[in-house]
Image (cartoon, rainbow, N blue to C red; front, top):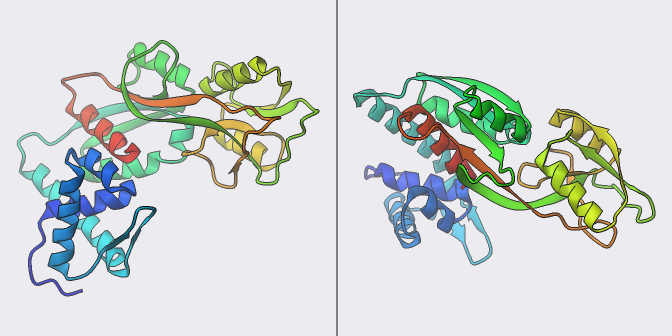
Length: 284
């Protein structure tokens, strides 16, 4: 790829946002722009480099070989630009943040979020606590955590929604649901949000069930599910490797939605604001 003209950073930011969001519309929301503006920026970028970077139609979007080659370089340029801006600013982010995150987020998406945040804000020290959303709410309310990423609990409207989705039954790809036997469940202990929603749904449908395995650790629950001990209610987006969605049917009722939210200390904590922004950008 031969480029004769300097490429504005905002065009690279639009390109990376589209790739990460898998959508022009979601990228526009992340960057606070119109979708038409994102499309124009990608068009300008493709004109500057003299290559088509993204193949898109109404059903799918994929990087071209030129787009694949550009992606890592674009990320590096954006990170360098952010570090330069911070080094020249009067107030780089500093301090210590105590983050609490639900176990399923810790073991799936959080490493990517933390890597991005740490590159951009290397002077912020992070302390992580993982656990059940209910316990993280309590720790936040007691002042032991600064930011929490949790499943929204009933009646609590605090925080910014990261996303919401239907809870799905997940388990070993070959798991068979026996309609005549109690449904074997792999569950977090009470007061887990997904546990409560799943059991309420089963009881309302008069579907018999039994707790076949319980653990406070997602690693333990995943191992049990992969072993075929039972199935578990879980976020499909954060589904552990080696497991598959078990489709709802006559013997397996459909589950309600779960909402993931980020709650912070409010105004006056730029480091917390930066971390929350990084999590919401990933979620978008």
